Length: 224
View 1: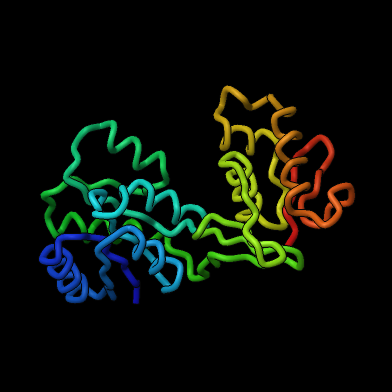
View 2 (view 1 turned 135 degrees about the vertical axis):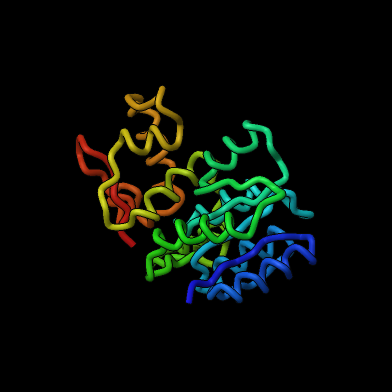
């Protein structure tokens, strides 16, 4: 049974959605704020997130970004925000669909059916442990020797991309485009500087890296 995480701070709406989804064959759990949403998505075997953007503790777009730090689970936004810039921001952050309030149950069910076709059975882990440090993708932090390692936003974005593709070669162009934007697709010197910084902070021996490997002329690979 597909598990849907409903993130909605209006209790009546959340309860009504939960009842209706149960009636149509879904399992549904509800949370009322962004922090609980990120925690539930990390701890529960969630298949699809249905997310309101106007939450009491953080903007829903930030919730999308945090979940995207470790998971590709489908995220459907349900929001009263109708402006095109709001839709673009949510979709750029990683939302798969955007439905404006008020909405009909039939429309929501149709969107869920589409999202369900994208669900894969294996859930990605929000944490990854190596012999030298632990990466908490949900919390966006690194712990090494019992202490948190401070990374800049750019360093984190590079590491996150490599960790999510662990064991795979990630091309220089892919990293540059996703972290800096299309205009920087050929600026490989940017990447060399940041990879060197990450090695100094994370590797036991930065000159002989165990986890952050360079594939000459092609890109980089993260090995746990």
